Structure formats: structure tokens, C-alpha cells
Image (cartoon, rainbow, N blue to C red):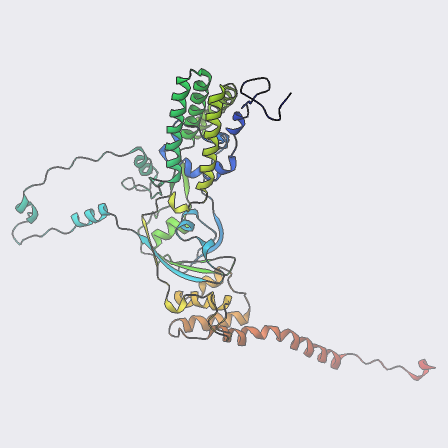
Length: 455
């Protein structure tokens, strides 16, 4: 009598795990979401099994990081960009800004210890009137010659791409303990364990399958290895501050106070993907990785039952781990420690999205939030440049008054003045139409019907 479920393994009517080859290519969406973070570190070249390795087999590589739709306007320089770059959205996620909210942030470069040492060593030496000998050398004796520091390949690449050969371009490396780095190292150790087990049970097919699929991940990982480079200022002339205002579609405003160097790196410039492998070698390595992947899929379907079960469970666990990594904050993937972010929102500008009282000015509104932003910038040029307010004579008058009061009157009732000035737009068309009607009736031609025509 035939049972309801298979019995045993590798039998005609027993359990079979030929589907393990399908598990190897499942989870492409999870891998694609982390693809750029996965290939930004040297750990991407580790031999290992990864879910859906075909997600890395693309004919072309992205040249930029993903962007967010938001209006970015320069307060002093008047620049207008319709998208927000990837890294500033990690420093201050605009998706977390409540509707009609307002915030002021101060972003600057963090002083590193080596920069402080350089600045300390470059201080003027104490000189006497009769000698030019360094006093520190007299007290402690001549210092030994410092050996030149060896440069890493990444630093050499950054120096080559920089406009200044003595200064590498700014870049954002991945975190040392990034979730992608942890997963890469963990999956490499898991693959080594599977290979040892396959050797112990004398499953040569599993050994070759694990070897080919691990080699494919290393080849394609090396072909996709890249580093994010930021745009730098090439001129050192004196320029105004690089403050920018970011406006979201939900009516929230974010004022970022920074210098021109930070603005060029994060907001105005483009984030470039610098790859270690050029285009032609990349295409060759992708073709080789595709061939190795096809061979490994065929071999995985011919492994013994224990190894098919072990590899299948491993792929299920890795798929779950990559999906769980999607829940981790993006700041855990990238090392943005070169920037220091401080919330400097004034007390009277906080909670712009919260109802304060029952008056018109106490209700959350786009006008009130925009007035807070004008009050802190003390300029309205960015409002006109960014298309924040309508271009009508009434709004022009209100903006002019807002700029004047932003300099010395923080308690200016912007909302009520907007109702008095801009609210006239609702009544002017009606009054004009009524006047036009009266004028039309006064000047309408009068037709006199002769008595003969009435007969």
C-alpha cells in the first residue's frame, strides 16, 4: 500500500532534493538591494556561496548611487538640484521628517587625530633674535628621520583620481563590521565547513560544486569591486557658505549649515563609482562567472542526499540573513565618521508640525514652516529659485516682508499676513468679473426696434 508521503531517500518513491539547484538562484531581490554595499569592500572577493549570484552578472555596472527625489537649493550660491544624493540621506533621512516639519543641522568635517598632529607640527617655530635653531631640537635633540608610510592600493587609486596628486579624493568606505562584511566572512566560513564535510563523506560532486560556485562568486565579486568617490573643490578661492535647504514633497524643510567643501561633497557634486577593474576585463570576468555558475548548478543537482540537504539549508539561512539585513539602518553599512552632524534647530522653530493653539498661526501649515526656514536663512532667493512659493504679485509682496522681518523680528505673524495679502487672490477675480459685467452692460450697444418692424 502506497503511503501519502515519500519514504527514505534516493529511492524511486523516496525524498529527492534536486530542487537545491533552484535554491541557489532564489533571493535575487534581497541581493540586489545590497549589491553596491556588498561589492564596496574587499570581502566581496572571498570564495563563498551567496544567494542568487546571477544578480551580479550584469552587462554594465552602475556609475552612481541611488538618489531620492527632493529639491535641494543653495541658500547663498543659488544652485538648484532636483535630487538628494545617497550619503546625505543616510546622515539625515528625509523619509523620517514629519509632514510640515522644520529642522536645522550643522554638518562639518570631523577633525581626525592625524590632522591635529599635522596642524601641531606645522605651527611656527620659536626663533630667537640671533639664531634660527628650533628650540624643541635643542631640548630633545634631533628627531630621527621618519620612514615613508606605505600606501594601500585604494589610497593610490584615490590619489590618482584626485586633482591634487598629493591629496586623495574624499571617499566613504564601508564599515568594518558592516552587515555585508559580516555576511561575507560568515558565508565563507560556512562554505569551508561544507567543503570539509563533503570531503569527509567522500562526495566528490559536492566538492566540485562548492568549488565552482565559490570561484564564480570570487570572480564576479572582484569584477564588481568598487569604491565611492566624492567630488572635491579644485579651487581654494574664497566663496560664501554652502548652506542648502532641502524641501520634501510633504512640505518639510531641512536647513543644512555647512561650508562649500561639505556642500560640494554631499549635495552639489555627484557620487562616483570608481571600479578597480576596467570595462573589458569586467565583461570577460562576468562571462567566466556565468560559465562557472551554470556548471555549479548542474553539479548541485547531482550531489548525494546529505550534501543536498546541507547546502539547501545553508541557502535558506543565507536568504533569511540577507532579508534581515534589509531591516538594518543604512548608517551601519557606510563609514561616515568624517562628518560631524549636530542638530542646531532653535527652540522657537522646533515642532513646526505640531499644533500649538487654536489660532490661525498656531495651526501647522506650509506657510509657517516656510517662514521658519526664511527666518533662519534671512534670504528669499532660495524660495524663488526652488519654486517653493507661487510667482504672483501678492506672494512677492509677502516674501519681501518676510525677508525684512527675518532680520530683526522673529515674532512676525507670517500666517495672518499671508491671509491678508495673498488671500486677496480669492476675491480679486470675482470683483474683476463683476466690474467687467457692469462695464459690459454700460457699454453694450442699444438696438432700437422701429415701430414699423413691430407691426
